[in-house]
Figure 1 (cartoon, rainbow over the protein chains, first blue to last red):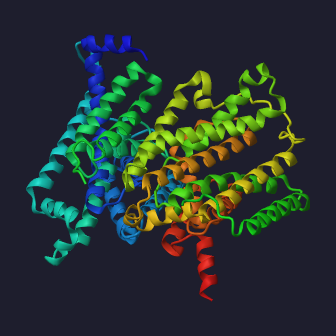
Figure 2 (figure 1 turned 30 degrees about the vertical axis):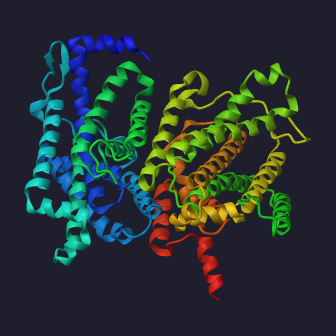
Figure 3 (figure 1 turned 180 degrees about the horizontal axis):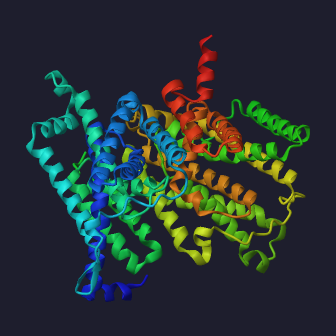
Length: 300
Length: 327
């Protein structure tokens, strides 16, 4: 533990600012992915172990579109859209068959998809690292210097996009008829069916939306780093942490938890570089023990 | 009165166990292929691991997703103890390996008592997530304690395996009969436990949690004892694996290692006592066959699991017994 290093960082404006910005970048990208996971759990009651694999697919799909069109916006959007269509096929074709099965069967079904997709992307795109889709040209500029803190402008773009997506998601859930139906499906699906509402359609569209968010996160991650088979595994576990800490099914909770985890990672890297992951799991253990329903979840 | 040991069929079971052991020794001589011997001993080591997890999954209905924690604890305990000065300082000699194995079981048992006491308070997915979180926490500790565990390189440098009772575990044949004997003995004991009134108590908690509390017996104690047993046996499996590989690796504490016994339980069957052992056999044969023929092991394993989940909807042994009983 290097508390001195942490103290020095917190008291220096440049370190404080750059670690905060770094933490926000990690946290907001994580929120994008985790909000999809928590949404799917809240409405469908299924823990989608394949969510990380969808994130990976988003990266590969956007890379493919990039190599054809060369347009950044297209790549990210079409990549995410492709993943949501894949998600729809997965939900309709496979996952919906095990909604009534026990947890173990659901977990194993999703995990088999992870194993299959991890190998399929290697067969299609090769097992070497692919260099990512890169940052759009207008952001290929020198980093900003604020109080001597080095902040790449594109990180600010990522933070803003994730934030805007979060706001859009919140508006969708609280202000639209669709959002009301989704939330009602989460609470009492049989009542909705009695009222003549097709909950199968709602579940499928929520899964599509969740997949879109995973794919979107993956596509944005592809602009920051390289793409490789299995890249979804660590974000999957981090999304679990966020989902648990925030409260399972709560998007607002996922937002809070993502920032906490982003900051824990960013400042943890200063204080205890070897134990940053351990710190996240310790937080997860503490939340589950002290407040199993999470920060914003409803008590059962 | 709760008992942990069922005596009715003990002599029958013990005879079957002993004959199986002799049969497997016979196979060693009949098929002089080290590859086959390796598969058989791995099936038993991984089978122990899967059987121990099935106490929780099959009989208690608790989906523990961090069972590799105890496998790795057993492995690292054995490796660290055999590497330590303790052995030379006290001149343990022939006692080293038996003490190391017992210590592995004890330490994994103690750790599972601590983790279990906290986890069993939660239900369903929350229980699964807490076991996962503890597992990854332990994994992070193993990675961080580079000086002791070797960090991400694993426990390197090997360790001595002093002979005991005329067994030199450095010799393949000695290792084979020893591992099989220990595994089969523990499986025999586990069988008695599962058929005892304690074992039926577990099934009752799984099927009808209200009834045991109405009968006035302590659900939490039952769950905790089951968790400790499962953890200790996983620790034993880990220590045997460490003896086989002369080392211990952090991947053994990673969450994907916890998925392996889940696969075995699914493939073999969770409602038949030896189902997970059967699953370990399928898993190992698949592993051996697929890795020899293609690089895409995950693809094949994934498709097989998908087939089981959507097609058979149960493990092979469960399915076979159902077909058999139907006639």
